[in-house]
Image (cartoon, rainbow, N blue to C red):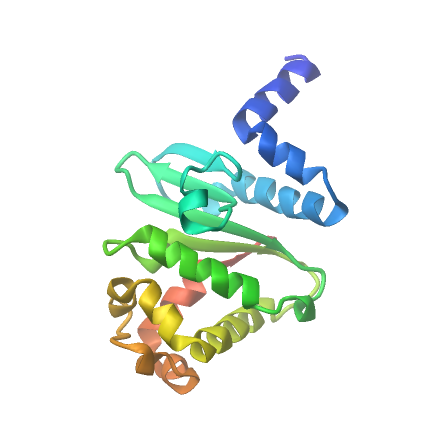
Length: 192
């Protein structure tokens, strides 16, 4: 297969808007490569029969929910998964604010029949050994800080992890909630 054919297939599969954004800045290029790496290793994150994959810029729900999803996967059973890719050279750059805003959007988009296993954050960083625990800690702090907004994003989904109201989203309650901790740990994936 010629190189130009491979590039044409890549452009068709990823979407021109994804590639256009990827080449705007160095930071966006790194984020784009993280998304491509996530796709290359998709079987590490999902044991699914994938029907289709949509990319940022082509996902219909973006305007409705006010966030540009990185990757949306639809299975043959019509179950939807969202993948958000993050690339941080230093954990201290990760404020958690954007991830928390995205989490609220994903919770809304999943609706009452959603589950936490449909949300995946793929974080690329090989420099910091405790990054997953740091990402989880920071995300929990943001959830606790704005518990009412977090809960109101999708109360039905929170109930699946034994959270029955905003009061159950305090930092102490989140740290003690095994079901929530297992769910959130499964949402965060690190690339090798």
